[in-house]
Image 1 (cartoon, chains in turn cyan, yellow):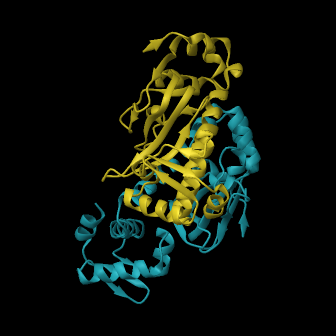
Image 2 (image 1 turned 60 degrees about the vertical axis):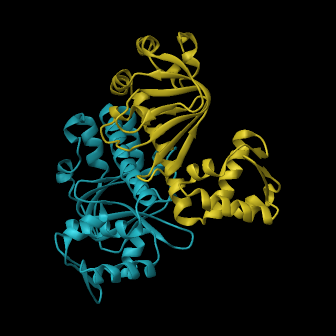
Image 3 (image 1 turned 135 degrees about the vertical axis):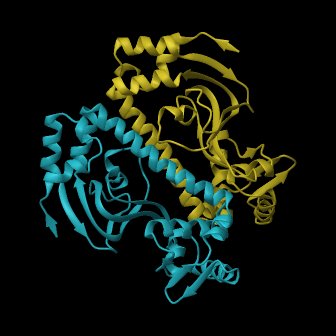
Length: 224
Length: 224
């Protein structure tokens, strides 16, 4: 489902006011608006180049996959976030097989890669904003790398559950063990074993397809 | 030891010819030249901000450390490479504790972060070059993440030894097991166990403080 709602795009593009009238017109003419259902794969790796995604509402997940199909969540994108990897073709030095899927029904704007690439070359603001954007995703990935290098799996699981509570604004999470394993780049069995241990310690309560957090305090202590 | 040799800096700055005369003068006035001995820690994490490093000759290693002191090599820098993390303070969104050490005696240029930051704001060329630079390091780190996610430790060790052979242009490597463990983010015992297995398979020959590659072919098969 595609709807023409370019009129409000300006409110979602962070440096809109720093663009010239001409640049604003170019963008307005080029962007398309889309609503995509949870579960949709928006960007399937380095071969894809649909364009820059600007999230109006909803939730996207950027992740990588291993040869054996393990997944690892790199970061999430929420309202007003921009996704650079879905337009990686415009940056010749950026080569990474990042996938982007829709986690919750999402409304978004798509800026064609060629249009953004041109703007990067004519507007200092766009170029420097892109720098900050990439630096910020790079920081996310470095944080994750540090977690993987430094933390035990139980600490990483605790940190993941806390993050989910924040995103969902709830202590009850609808998450299968399989789904958690796909976020963390590990096997389902590992998640199941750790969650059972968490339950024995009174940290969580497990039910079919769901996890209830019983003690955020103990979870925070574990994650630290 | 500091020597004034600004006269040749232009040959090592990749987009020198795309700068204006004024920008070239600003850079020439600001850069300093240094020679640093192997083993020197040039950049000690996110608090440091000595400036952009441009390698004239030698070899640098960018790595991260875990809380327990494990290290993981992120990438190496050689002649004409530029190090952005040593000037991360100029990119407010870039926050990562990356360390940079001198692996081989190195001659380099240092561009003060303030000077480069100003250039990024006045020169489209510098801004877009910085984008490509960051994208290229990002790609290195994503490749490493993929290795960690996808590959077994023996495959990663095989890939590391092959890379060392390429860098050193030799099949005889002066590397301790401890040193390899610090590149790979693992424990020395793990490296020792794997190397012994490699030796039993006729892939390497171990000696005090050194490793000789006996079969690049078997090593390549393992790494794939």
